[in-house]
Length: 148
Image 1 (spheres, rainbow, N blue to C red):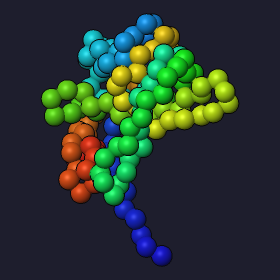
Image 2 (cartoon, rainbow, N blue to C red):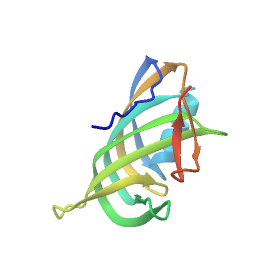
Image 3 (cartoon, rainbow, N blue to C red):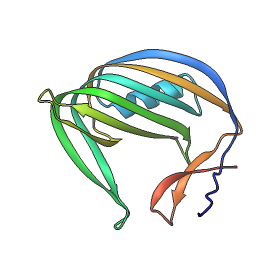
């Protein structure tokens, strides 16, 4: 049996926030503005609510790109979870989402802009300590955490 090694960084919990976004032109931009306003450098978040439309994708490892698609709404954000870590020049936000379209069909993947929202509630758990940075990994073609 092959042994796998986990690479980790120890962080500590910081502040805990709950909030809402209303009529935001983009979910990721709205969260980024909140992170900047509260000076949150790293954290984990979750969100639920209603999107007017959505852009999301699934990673194609053979081509090292996301196959992105748009879905017209309204869409229920059944689940959205993600993280923010320091990036090279701005906060690096990664979120994955599941949408319901009202016809008992679920769709989702990695969230991209533009995803305008009507009403979203969110929770943010700030992380402090020796923070990893999200950088480009040429091996996978993706942004990955660079752990200290």
